[in-house]
Amino acid sequence: MVVELEVPSNFCPECRGLVIELHDRGETVCNQCGLVIRERDIDISRSGIRAYNYQEKARKCHNGNPISLLVPDISLSTVIKRNKIYNQDLKRAVRWDLQMSWKSKNLLIAITELKRIASNLNLPQHVQKTVVKLYKKALKKGLMRGRSIKGILTACVYLVCKKERIPITLQEMSIETSLNPKVINKYYRVLIRELNVRPPVTNPVLLIPKYVNRLNLGIRIEKQAIGLIQDFIKGKFFSGKDPKGLCAGALYLLSKLANREITQKEISRVIGVTEVTLRSRYKELIRFLNIDPNLFKN
Image (cartoon, rainbow, N blue to C red; front, side, top):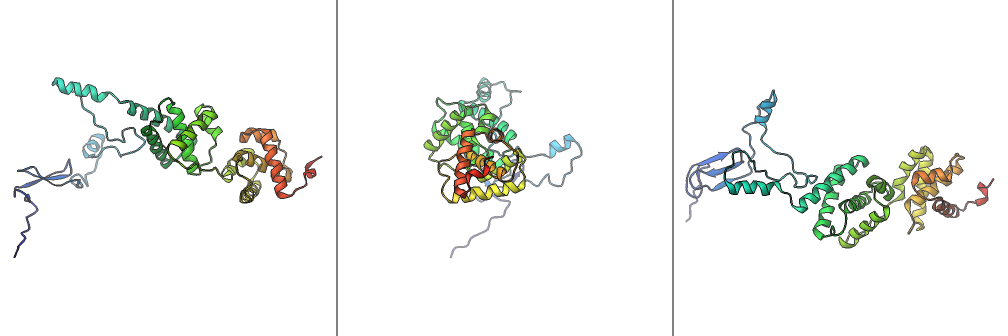
């Protein structure tokens, strides 16, 4: 018959020595053999203490910055202080600690640029974190060799925005980053090919509210344009066509049906397509709706 004896909580289960609690580390260790009995405990020693000035608040604070992907080292870096270090080996360690690796510099530049783009385009936090994850995959895959940091980052932002169904076009990304749309599209295809990502398709319905607002066409034309484009896509007439061109053609057609004074040039300038593309989508929509083209001729 085996009898199990419960060891009191204030004794070490290995050497039966006294245990002590280290509140600053959140650990319970043995005072005799050093065994860590518990770790990551919640420190309640400073709970309930009110702070009335900055000094009391600094004494009460016992945690660091939150972990975030939007920081190059995820807020987990350590810093060796220089003051009161006389050992030459430690001084050399401090010098090496201050130097950043190529990967850290790359992430620092990319995340700084990402925050600027996200601030101007009003991208939410979860989109920014997804962009950082995708950029780190590209960096680990070695896609940065021979390519610019800004180009790969912009392609990552564009890809994530398309996945998250955020209505941002390639031209808008080009204007924001001062990069040629062909360069962004080139890097975008590199990401899809090398990372085995399924390319998402931009739904032109998501772009309609933004363009209607810029053209001041009203809620009625917006609803009609959304319904028209949805029917057009269901009929499988949208394959291989630019979403912006379809939006331009639909808005121009509906504005003419509503007797709104708006020109092809104005719509093309706001949406960012050529007038040739607008007229091509406009004619396709007329045929789709079986409308007599002579109806709009003066």
